[in-house]
Structure formats: C-alpha cells, structure tokens
Image (cartoon, rainbow, N blue to C red):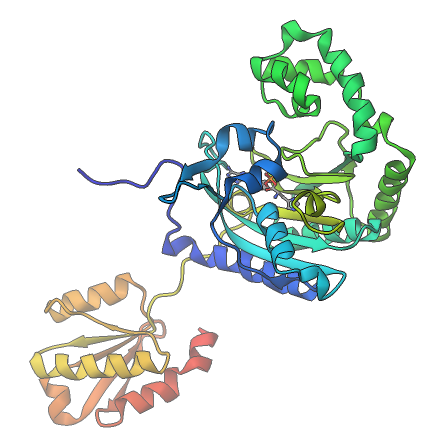
Length: 423
Ligand code: HAM
C-alpha cells in the first residue's frame, strides 16, 4: 500500500516554489527595511508555554494542540503559533537588556489539529513580526501599515484591515460581568462549549463558530462601550496614526481574536475569495504577555500572515525555468564527453542536461523540445572527428558550430549568467 502524507499536512511542489519564495523574499525585504531582524525558534516547546500565553479556554489550547509526552515524560507541543515562542526566547536570552525596542521576525510552519478545508491546514506556515518594548500607539499603526504594505507587495489587491480594541484587564473585568449577565439570560441558545466559556472567559463566546451562538452575540454588549479612558484614548490615537499613514481600515467591534494574550489593539486583514477562512493575517498588542511569562514589564505588538491563505489570493508565478542547454549524444564516447561538459557547466552555474537512458537522438531531441530547453548541442562520432559541435538556438531556429576543444569555455561566454538573465 502507498503511504500518503498525514491529513492536513501538504507538500509544496517545485512548480509552486517560486511564489513561496517571492512571498518570503518580499517579507524579508520589507521587514528588514522596517528594522526587524530574523530569529529562528524551535518547533517544539513545553506545553505550559502555550497553555499560559494563548489561554486555557481558547480553541487552540482546548482542542488543537499537537501535545505529547516525550521519552523523558515531559509534556511538549508542536508550536501552534509563534508569538509565545518568540516571547519566551526574548525573555530567555534577555534581549531587552540590549535595546529597549526589539523587532523580530520569523518564518516557519505551525501546527494545529483543526478540520482541514480550503485555507485551513494542520501544518501551515506563518510570517511573524513582533515589536517588543514600545507602548506608543504610533507603533500599532506602523505595524498595521507595514502589514498592509507587505501584503500588497505580494500581490494582494482586495483586502480590508479590520481593527478593534480589546481593552486592558481593568476595563475587561467590568465588561466580563456585563457580558456574563447578558449570556446568563440566553443560556438555552448557547452551545455546550459556550456554557463553559460563559463562566470562565465569556469574551470567547464572540469567537464561537456555532450559528446559534453567533446569533446571540449579534445583540451582545460591546467592549468598545466599556473601555477605560486610557484604552479609549489609545484606540483613538491608533486610528489617527493610521489615517496619518493613509491606511484604510474599518472598525469591527465584535472581533476578539482566538488568543487570550491580546490587550488594546487587535486586527485582522480579510481578503475576498477566501470563503469562511478569510483572514490572511492577524495580530494585536499584548502588553502583559512578557510579564506573565516571567519576564519584565515590557509591552509588545505583532502579527502573523498565513502564507497558504495568502497564496490562494495572489497571482502565482510560473514554475522554475527549464535547463538552459541540452546536450544530445550519439555513441559511447560522445556520452562520456557530454557527461564531463554537463558537470563543468553546472559547476559554473549554467544549467545543462543530458539523457542517461541511451535513447535515440530523435527521442532525446523530443525530450529537450518538451522541456522547452532553449539551446541544444548535438555530439556524435562525426562531431568528434570534425572537432565541431552544433549548437542550436531553439527559439530563433538558428544554429552555429562550436569548436569541440573549447566547447565549455565558449558556452560559458555565450550563455553565461547575463545571457541567462536576459532570456
Ligand atoms: P492567528 O489568528 O491564530 O494569530 O493566526 C494568524 C494567521 O495564520 C491567520 O490569520 C491565518 O491566516 C493563518 N492560520 C491560522 N490557522 C491556520 C490554519 N489552520 N491553516 C492555515 N492558516 C492558518 C496568531 O497566530 C498570532 N500569533 C498572531 C500574532 C502575532 N499576534 C501577535 N503577534
């Protein structure tokens, strides 16, 4: 029986790779221009890191983590997101002692045991950016502006930035009670999960995907009406700085995000054409996370782009180009010479190919044609004795003779990088 990939885990095939690379390269370019430096974090963390930061009542921690006991009996988890890990690394390596403001980015796979569907995988990739150390609302606006810029540079055209304020523990505390009282009167309409959430973390009910609960929440009181003065002012300032940078946005007062560490600003970028999973990127401020994980009182804000989702809504690039030169051979000696030439050309960066299956000249040429290889050289006994090799330019339909003795050197000169780039 053929062994297939695990459900929700996909391969990224060579024909897709250029679009992946473009997105990653664009991310690196934009993020580095905005002062972010790359960090690489492990795939596996202690389970408690996520339980403590993402929140025990979230879907991620309740249902979606790949957690297991390692051979030493420790509970470990494949990272479902990167912010907690980056915050852990920031604390562990005391990065705050080097500079009060630290900007980090990370690109890599995340793991969540969700039901796979379009735009939702169990292994998916994120581009994460995090700023530690600045509470000023200017940074909230800058982070969102750079996210929108990066998404547009990747080719995303139809998108909307939605923002909300989730307040701070102080304003949330009062709101919890108001929301709890509201939910108390509607228990019959709530799902089992939300009945539990109502007690432990009523804000999570906003995030429930069950239709009945969503209907209830249509009429629920909103956090924006309960923000404390400081949070209200922060949100107003964030909005005015977004306007300063001419970044269009809309306020979505029901957005709570699926993770508990957020304070004040929360945001999502939704794209057209993604169906139910429409957030291509999301993030927010988390001013208490570092301290809650045992670090100093340092505020933070960041975002993550879902790379697979982004790829569904941006134009794809064509597959990588074929080899530049195909050397067709006739006879043993020619084959040996072509073998050496191919090696020498590839070693100098010119993609050359030949056939190793001893097929007729006709079928070798057919293969070169099928692969759309732009140059074909033919070498057989006749060429070896005359000392000249035919080089065909398949696009122009022209051909010329190249001396056998200096073939590799001539090809390097004629088809070297500048010619290749011009193709
Ligand atoms: P998140 O909203 O859980 O936030 O995920 C961010 C993005 O990752 C989503 O908007 C989506 O594009 C993508 N994503 C999430 N789950 C899946 C999935 N199962 N399959 C495919 N794509 C998915 C976070 O992860 C936060 N750590 C973001 C953040 C960074 N907040 C502050 N800093």
